[in-house]
Image: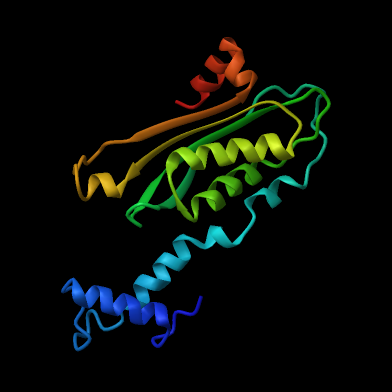
Length: 191
């Protein structure tokens, strides 16, 4: 998307901000605000133009036939609430249990999948499910899971103004859903 001063999106942003009394084209401080708003939204939603699953297509053999749970914790992300177009930020814990003898992916790939699914108009519940679905779709897994903790500015900065509130969601597939001991092990790793 073009974010030049004359783009239709910038013109629309200027109109909206002006109608809300938030934009003065004669002010040095806000003259460029419509372009900055469009640019910020474009950056924060860049993930809608890429396929996050591509990161799961390069695999390699594990060091052992049964590597156990592979978990990455504290994956930071920024997303945009699709209802209010306000940011929500947090961390995800992502993990999977490869089938015996199955190939695995590099740990950074799990982070990239989370961050690219997050970088689009999103709801947290869908984000976690998309990550788990991607893992089960592209990797030979016995289990997959994603636990997300985040603060939603649509809840902390407006409406309820519940500063400090955190939303936690979990999405589990395979043995993480059906095996209580494995689920407990995974959930302990998310804390």
